[in-house]
Every structure is written in C-alpha cells, then in structure tokens.
Image 1: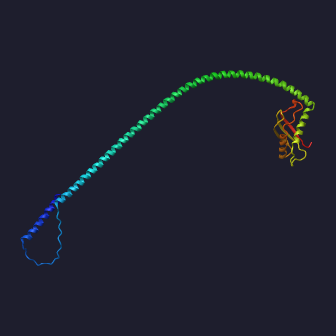
Image 2: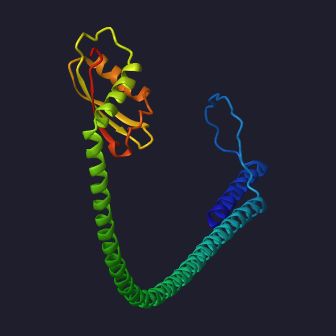
Image 3: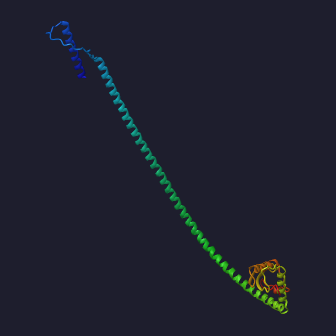
Length: 267
C-alpha cells in the first residue's frame, strides 16, 4: 500500500514541475533543433480512492475466503465428528447385538443341557421299564416255546401216525396198480395238449418236474432232461401248463405235490 502511495506522489510532483516550467516561460539555451516525430505521451492518473476500494475488495475477498475455509474446516470437523459418533453408535449396536446373541446362545445351551438331563432321566426310567418288560417277555416266550415244542412234538407224532397210515394206504394202492394208472392218466392228459414242433424227431424221451396243488392245478413245469431241442422242451412245458388241472389220483393217498413225469409222446 505504501509503494502505491509513493508512486502516486512522485507522479504528482513530476506533473507539477512540468506545469511550472511552461507557466514561467523559462527559456533554455537554444540548440540545433532536430526534427523528431512527436509521439503522444500516455500517462496514467492513479486515483487513490479507486486503489483503496480495490484494496478493500481484495481484503474483503481474502476475508470471505478465510471464512469459507473456516466453514469448510468446521464442516469437515463436524462431518468427522458425526462419522466418529456414528461409528461409536454402530460399535455399540454391534456390541449390544453380540451380547444379546451370546445371552441367547447361553440360554439355548442351558435349555439343551436341561433337556438332555431330563431326557437321560426319562431314558434311564424307560430302560429300567424295558428291562423289566424284557424279562417278563423272555419268561413268557420261554413258556410259549415250551408249549410250542410240546405241541410240535405232538403234531410230529400225529403226522407220523397219519403218514404211516397214508403210506400204508399208498402202498396198498401201488400194489393194486393204481399209481401206474394215475401216472398214465397224467401223461395222456399232457399228450392231448402237446403241440408237436417241427424240430421234434421220433423217439422223444423227456423227464418233466411238475409241482401241483391238491386240486391238480399246475404251479410249475420244468423239463429236467430231454433228447429234444429247446423248442421241444418249451412245447412240453407249455403242454403241462395247458393240461392244468391234472387228473386226480384214484386214491387220495397217491397224491404227490412234486411229480416226476416221463414224457414219451411216440409210445
């Protein structure tokens, strides 16, 4: 500011001196005149009031900048404080939630332990009751087993008696030729239902295992040995199934669940 004032004062002094020379008409020694093209003299008149206003403007701008920076600093500090407080609140919230979870977990562990202890007590009581019932059931089963063994023994004895009677009756029937008659009836029944395949040669001789019910209904028929091919074997099995139910024996004592039938269709 002082430099600007000094420049202004020197400019004023210079102008005053020039004006005084022209006004007093001082004559300087004449020298040969050299024609020089005159150039307009440009001067700058500095208004101190304007300079002061500009300085005030600059100072005001600097003051406002300092205030702006202060506001920004305050805002940053407030934002930092808010973030710090928010972080503290979040940490407190997390800690509170963690304590709540820990408390809940501890309560759950206590509940599980109590339930386990109660379950163990109930299991022990149930085990004692099961052992008592098992001992009673074991005794009951032992008694039932003894009774079954006595009943089975009696049944075996009865079956042996019946088997002996049936065997005696069957022997009598076989001796009378009724078994051969029964087998011949079955063979003829199978021959009636046999569809001779083209591959069957003369002299077919096959053994068929037949499982039947007392009603004569055939359950299974399997060719055990045969001098024919697979088509012949299959045709004989189909014939046995088609002949179901098989003829009943002349004497019930001759009934056999498992029959061995010799199939000779050319005899």
